[in-house]
Image (cartoon, rainbow, N blue to C red; front, side, top):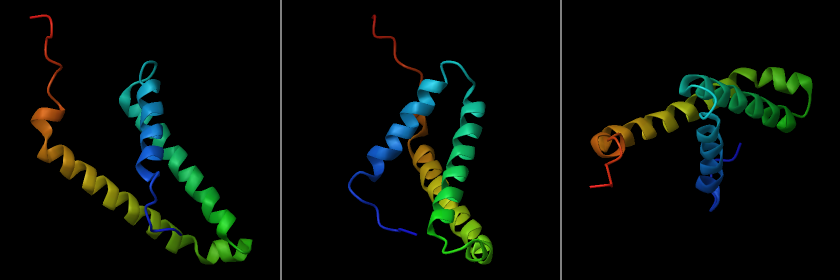
Length: 100
């Protein structure tokens, strides 16, 4: 599985985030988050199946695949939570009233 981040990595991630933000017009954040995580898991299972030479290989690599994606998610979540913690007051402040 690729571990290098290419030039478009964050642009692709931002496109997914924009879609999730747009979906919040009709659904609560938690519901959109759950759908987002399910979609990522489904796509990652598909990618893993595409990389397997056979059903038996996919079965043999099942736990390693789960461990890999779980660890990658943990790293990304930790990085992003730490980012929000470091700038919480600015990032989560309500929009200022620009009419004054």
